[in-house]
Image (cartoon, rainbow, N blue to C red; front, side, top):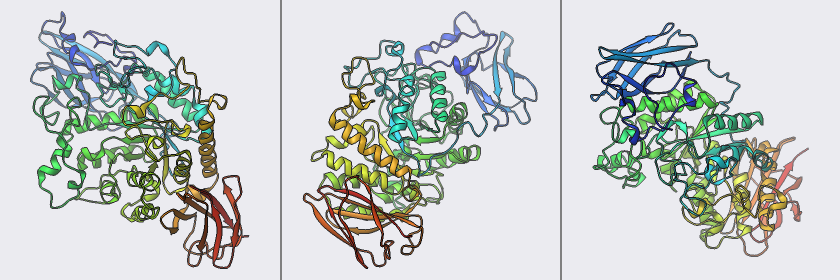
Length: 632
């Protein structure tokens, strides 16, 4: 939708008419308006009473000579800043003690005046979302465009869809398609959905993934309206499920109006003609001896030439981005945030961002993307500890080190004790129990498309994902053994979600034998996990590792041997080519004194022998076994 012309007597709810802030729309407010002030947009489009006072960003024309008035109850204007060309005005409101209301924002000059209605709304009750993400949860990553098409009317918009035959084009997935398949997700054992960014990418060709926003206050029209998104979140919450929003404060899409007409000086790091790229490795960020250039180009370089890098060191940009996150959280009742390209944004911004988010929403948890295999690097960005003089406030990073270790040991020939060594560095994290573990995501090759992969290895990987400490995250389609190479091949459509699909993997009758084998395995693991506090809340003790086997125990208290009424869960994962007889010494482990064991998973029982100091059993090729010990 094009930007609205100036003179609108009043707004309907502002979020329902938000429109892409595109470069080609810059002159819309000028048409037939002479030199009178004109306002065609306000960010944020509404706010809430009993919240910190907002900073508004107005767009229009002839605002440089305008006098601004606020007409409402207990409303004040504490500060203003207008761009030299008169296209932008920052207004800092004083809303302390202000009631819920619709107020008028007036810009007047000797040539005329313009006005807009701005609403202060009632905040949502704390029961309407804001639940946070915890180790008991299972996160499911969906690329909205590639999951399911519930509304064909939004498949082709502006001629930029490309069709399903275009690997990097729009394929038609939308919010309604996701909502229609919540039964599938909940039956699988999913509790939380993480959708790749939902904001409008209008004007960005092939930006189906959502990471090139051109309007931070609108959903992409290919996905549906904001009302459609709110309906999806409401449906999730009604089921006791959660939503995690993907926020991208590092960059925007090149088609956004800001690129040609920045709201303020130094809105971006560099310009389209003159900018750097983040070529330095992440290791320079924690390195106290690194040259400033090596560290600075990571946070100031443009991720790509089509993704201008925002300058979060500019207080105006910082305020805008923090308010934008708050707006979405409050509008939808968001439960958690996935924070994109975390190391590419300065630590002070993240500290300020998390301080405001956690002050308003104490339960919300944030997960940061630090795409690196070394726990020393990943842990540097975790919150709860001061590094380089700043605590980022991040609740947890994604556990990329464990992702790399899982693939290394199961697919790339490394011994299983390499995974044990990686887990042994959990001391670097203030809260390792919060780490979000995963086998793959939308930026990696599918596990099953790696050389040497097999269904047995995929099942072992899922077994570890469901039983290791942390919060498991599944990439849509891995639970049905989907294939996919490097981007964009790893982003194939979910089978059964689109018109004409011959294979409907959303229902058992529509799955292939291979799809059903993996689906049933994953579903069984997730439900087993949900029913056992030891696997969701318990500590972890690694008790054996060698070239082909890793064994560990999960339980609520592992500091002593078995005691009456305390569950111990023994997990054994192998990459053995042949059946292997395993004897585990239990002396001075969490299993010391445990005498009674039962097999929890899989259903086919294995022989199990217990002596005073050992447990012995046979592990099938590429085997995965879970046992429980409960002392009576």
